[in-house]
Figure 1: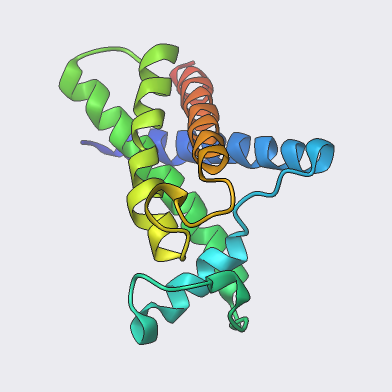
Figure 2: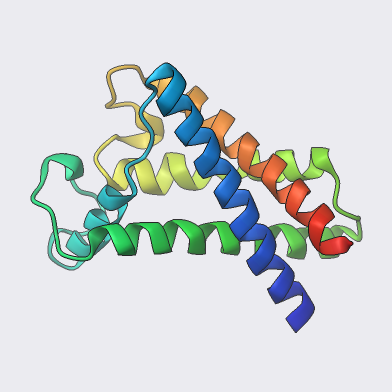
Length: 160
């Protein structure tokens, strides 16, 4: 790993996460499909020292000062870390970036959502405590696939 890879991961992670956010905005504005409220992500993180990693009904709990800034920052930091993982995987595989590899990698990252984020925020393993678990799972998979498209677009941008 070198500074070029770190800089590429930073740029590509931001691009892929921004595409994911644009996708979420499009779904919400056209189809009224709610997305992860990043302020709630920040609230979950701020409550961890007192309530632990697995919490119930985080969205219904009182707001905390700075939760939105923290949630958005962590959201983009995760995207950058996932991009770094993508580049490290490509280096290990000795393969150039490709759309299929980017989407496959991004779909694999849904494990983080299913087994860390969703249970931690009260939705249960793979969203099993949500009103429509299979719909939530499908939305997570689709969103991570969109992130993969963003990884590929960002890779094309930084390689030129």
